[in-house]
Image (cartoon, rainbow, N blue to C red):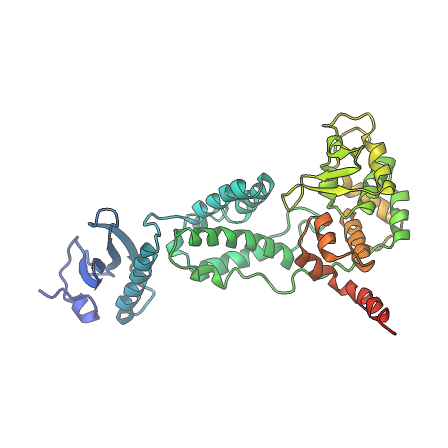
Length: 390
């Protein structure tokens, strides 16, 4: 009885049976073909020895490979089997991990190595943009293909934004990149941990879009910032003044408690922020005045810069008051609380403060500062060159 499976004619001559027909690839490693009936496609699988017992106990289904012509299926099965053998040889696991499993593992990884804030952000992105695609979420990582991810990426592109000034609009390139980056990181972690033999499925399909994070062009000069603050209510004016004095994200400033400010040393501790790390900023007297007054007679747990009712600011609370103040001050369309941060960073860079220090007090990376604000260094460089003149 013929037992070869490496050609179409030999497979056609095989008798149907429950047990697979095996082809030896290397010592202890086989690719198999199971033919359950005379009609239809057979299925392919791989077999390898268990490193712990030395017995043939590890099996991996490879599918029908029906998307390929008959004469190419053996080579494709052998290639897939070989990749699995190499995966096991590198210490990879034989257990099957789904896309949903990979996402959950990445969230736990962030909680253990980064911060709860970063983990919560990733978990929310997965829930809203990955796990809601039931078929994709349940796909086993070895069966994940580039077309799967291309379909997901196109659907995500058409999904409207959920919040912010552009709520309901088509997703921007930068927003799409943030969601793809999170998903790609989860899959990369699974790959590095040996849960899948190759990153081929997402290597090209989850690359960030180029030129998505363009420089933020809307800049408010000092006169405009003063007018912005003047047109705001008293509680919002203090909040905007804080943004005008320090290059903080609005959310980080809003999260500050009275206990985060050391009145004696004039040191402000920034805790809840995008980068997930605490940092301390030594304030000059002129800046400290605002925080001295704001922290006066407050309990450590109270909001440092609070709303009139004593509650903390948040993006929903400041959104419309900020918009109304910007309109009253006749600022350019699109001016937001975040515009203050951009304007302050622009001034710091333009005035010659080194980029490392700007990055540190802003809570971001030097690369990000260079990308968005590096063009402002040209005047600083020109001034330095001028001073070299004899």
